[in-house]
Image (cartoon, rainbow, N blue to C red; front, side, top):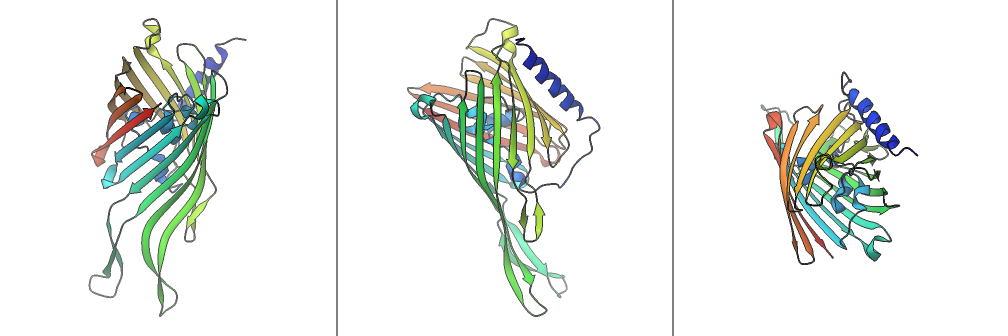
Length: 336
């Protein structure tokens, strides 16, 4: 069998998908629960979220659950904070365990919480202002999930992630009749499913894979129905350092490219690079193609083995056009 066939086929598919970026019609306001499309992980943020074929332990649950399959440590815990635009805070926590040295696969738990800040509520009134102030609203969003990943061979990995997501948008007064009113809480919830695959070719650390995120039935606020932000992604990654010198564990230069087909927008492409030195320092950068305000991303990471513990701290910075900038910080610890 020609071993270069899957490589050529995957590159061809990505090129075709990438050409769709040119002249594609925009699809706007097609979905709700957009917080599910925003990543908190700093490593991913610095690499332009091009993470489909990157193995990242428990944090892979937020991108491609198959990336959790190569976890070697028994326990992995990752916490991330994303100071998003308009004062919105995204916090994420993920935990994964490897029982029986991975023979049973990897089991994971994910948690994401969004704090939208405080908003002054109002309602229509007959006074001179035309409105009166009501209580202050504190909208929020929450997602909790369970994931599983397993390496079916030394090259092929699969993973899945089921999550319960909800969003609270405060209260409002609804007239029941001409003389009576009632207070209604605006809460919506849904179950969603993610799954993905990664195939490692064995040639210069080249890998390709795919993921489907936020596959779900329609949900609704009150009487208005909407879909979740379903996204199909194809990705490839390769170690460019292997073209410059013999393959080494001391230095790597990873190039990762993802082609995205989101339900709520036209096709996009995420490009990321990561330079690894001595498994200690990581320098990262990325580029986001066909986004309204974002494009260039950057960041770094530091990791250190302390006995049986591996501790990693990552930081990402993203200029965000008229919204100034977005900063992400992640802390990860892995234990034997």
